[in-house]
Image 1 (cartoon, rainbow, N blue to C red):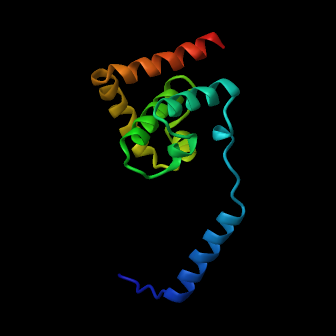
Image 2 (cartoon, rainbow, N blue to C red; image 1 turned 60 degrees about the vertical axis):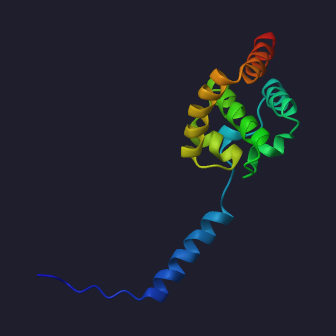
Image 3 (cartoon, rainbow, N blue to C red; image 1 turned 60 degrees about the horizontal axis):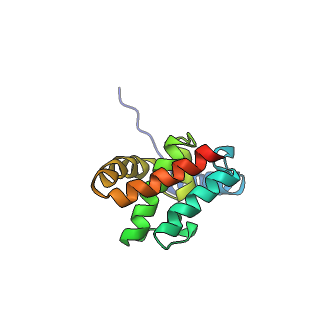
Length: 131
């Protein structure tokens, strides 16, 4: 009862390549991660400034501790205050959504052990409340 399926691998690869090319050419940014409002951008800059980083560090793959801490707090801010989805935060930070889940878990632990980082996050929240 088995039917043999003959597949021309060359044609399959060509088809996959044309589909991917079509997707790349017609890609538009989702509206969920368009630039944030001014107060949210200021909050991210405040987080990065505390660690002597620029907001570009949020999109890097560096394991430098200040950059990692800035990414943790930025992800927490975008999730808790801005209400972004994990996918939207991942797209903004150029990370997979599972990495964002890791960031959110680690940020809670980080804020418990480093009171200085908790104070930075509270300052950012106060900035949001004042706006």
